[in-house]
Length: 172
Image (cartoon, helix red, strand yellow):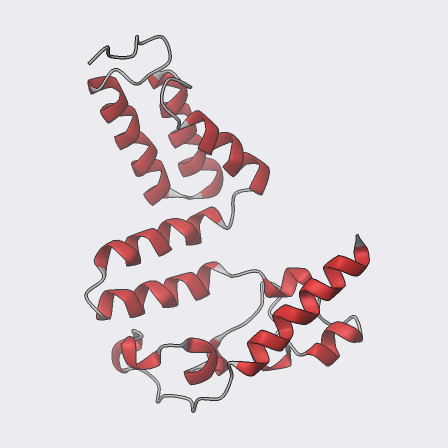
């Protein structure tokens, strides 16, 4: 298993390094990134960091082989997702930007809890009160306000469409 993870990390590092051919774009005006900054890995690598703060250009195959970079270093950060959201917005992709911002919030939520919430968001799996509790947890425990609003909206829609636990499925 450890060998497979090492091989996976080595392959990810190889792919990242292969994609780092572009030149860095100048710093964006007003602090916002634009479509001209995309892809960040090749045009703005100096602003990317791993979750542990390692600069992107130090995430090399050699660093992995020497134990200086681990799988954790290759996880996306909320900051990188926000940068991608700014790029999407500048290209007129508002919904993609919103999705990236929700993803940024979810980086703070443990993977196991995300899977639990996902299952509880399926039709007929939760009551309105349970969904409101999830929203409260996302907002207060993890600071995930956009995701909390999404769950609250889901609770309202599920109530209107009779998709809460205990509601009978429509025979239409």
